[in-house]
Image 1 (cartoon, helix red, strand yellow):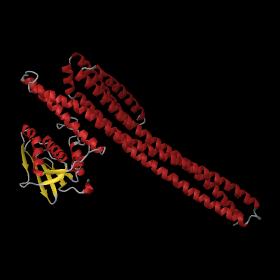
Image 2 (cartoon, one colour):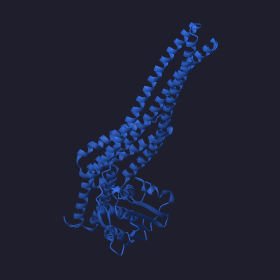
Image 3 (spheres, rainbow, N blue to C red):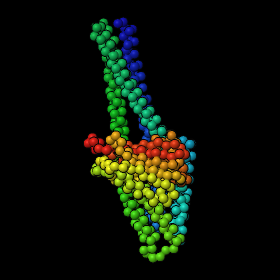
Length: 485
């Protein structure tokens, strides 16, 4: 190798080292920017959740004060108001660089202010007239504002979550690029250094000066390698922090499920008391009531019972989400569990003016499963059919077919569009997503039912034609295998 070639090799090594260092530096800078973008998106999502939860807390305090008249409920009410305003302000600051998201945040802020005014007016009205305050709550004005706020928050959250996915993907790509630059650059620098050292060993006497220069360059390469190792260590620390953040998110999700379960239990007790006392008043146990009062009490019973059903759905959902849903196996008689489920909803079907039919096996047939869970699924499916059927009939059928126990609920209701038939089993999804929908509910019934069906070793599916009705088919194995338990 000539002197000129050696000089070229030495210069190439130095340039490569410099380029690797510069590339690694800029890649690390880009990685930090990507991580900051991910953190920013997570902060926006947390502030959105904070706005909705604070508004809900304020509304809960207001309802408690209106129902009981106890001023102690005003403390969480005022605290929720203040927190909601703080979260809205923080959200506006976070999305200030995005005009579209800023407009949505302004809309959410306006809805929060409307909700606060509605809450203040109702609280002030309670001090003057408790009945008028309660009527104002039942009017649904506050719920409409909350639904609008949730819709706006959902649009903001959807956009932010899409950005989060994109930014996280960008972060991963930059991380991989940094590792590739470091590895390839280090390997290339190593090859250059090896070539130079071999040349020096073969011509050490004739080119002493060149040898000294190459040794100096080798030292520089070692220094650069140490810097690159430090950069790699920083990348490892960043990855560890990201993993810790993911674990923290999982802990928060479990805490949310535990909170739902506790709050649902706490709500169920007073709701059952409301149902019981309303029934006593309706039956005249506490004294005579006129027809108008009896009709109002009936509405109270109906609303409270509906809330109890919603709480039961949330309880089932939280137990399933947390893995605490216990399956109690035992012999179940097909015809009996079918008739029991039908008997529970038959009065509601009759009250709506619908025809109701039961089709059960002629011969006695039993299967091994959890009778309560089977009955819960059937009642959920029947209640769903009643809710979306205005005329015609509802049929509950059961039979034993090829080692399976099959239940079907058929109706002549509004039906489900083909593109929505897989979505009806999603959590909180409903056929009618508008704020003015006629059919109520939390959108958990079908989701909980499918999860329970699969926990029992079976499944739940639907066939439907828009405008002609739906057929929900739920099946479980007649004999439960040990591997399914």
